[in-house]
Image (cartoon, rainbow, N blue to C red):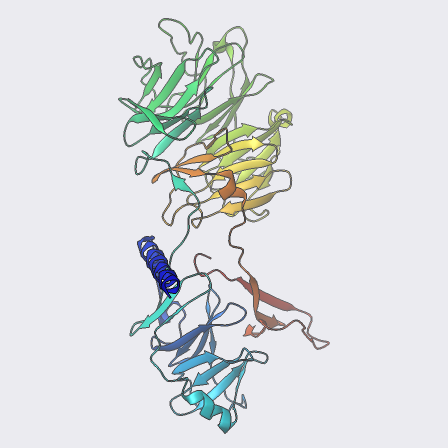
Length: 516
């Protein structure tokens, strides 16, 4: 007896701890009424069927919700249904998987194999009367979302799980630059705080470097010097005084030891001798607002600007002799650069140049063809590929088969060869995430760090590559020969078409009520 009492107490305590933890999780409330598809604001009951679809009894018909839209089941003239009203007060799921519906004074069944209301025998009605008509207290679906109703309609309380986490010390600081040094230390430049946080391999903050500017880029040269570019204008070496008033967005070292600087307002510049006691910058070599610079193994320099690309070959003897030529969009050539608003540029090991634009998708071209008089790009966008968005705020090329593209509130992992994309949306990051123009970096353990206005998001390989919740697919509507779609497919596995019915449209839903 004492043993049983102990077990019961432990179960009660564990249940209490679970409920307490659940209540402290961040939740989101979503409301549904007649403005977003619910047939009526008075909801008397609800259930989830065997396919995962949600059903609700309203005073204006029986509603089915698939996570995207409400489908209304109502009586129609000539439908042979015995039911005489659309006022459904309560529903329950029958043993056969159909929807039993209680009206003001009778009980009917909605047959999910035929999608019609039908009468049921009186003796069966008698057995159901005691189970129906009670006040609906709501339900919890199979994902743990809580559904309730009040006089203004239906509402859902969900507890979204976000696998990514914010890096300590970056919340609300808007990380604008990221770098992993030779010792695997992570440097995070914070725009709002005008400082740099340095983290060890365990993501522990080890020091903070205060600055007079917002650090827009951090770069370590082959000699071990740390250069910081900022906005308002600053170019700082090893924590010393700024040597330039220009706003610096990016920098890269060539194989001759020179540092090439992308300034936002003064174009491309070069520091001929970065190790000098008092290093100096050249005059502008071209361009105006430059966001990103790369130098290829062939000594070609490619810069992403707000007015297209700048391309040229660095002069090995004197950087001032380097000539940069513009590559811009030409509305008369479909193969030209898709947009002049270029955010980033990268090169893979096969010599392909990948260009990320502000809102027109991704362009790809070989390095050799980029220097043609009329270069022809291959365009990837939402219209011809699996990209979820045409917006590229920043990007990082991991390998020839993985390009990480940062959008407004999601990240796309694109394989440029197969053009297949995996999208990580708000469910993965945060309900309100707004990513910044910060180039992502990968830590030695495979963790990705991505800058957003909310902070630096960290996504481990386990979070990225594990499948997590896989929503089941349910067929929902069928339209034949262009007629109005009929909600009738969920339980079917066969369609019969007449000889003249050659065109069909089938819709489906991925059942996810937490975040679809």
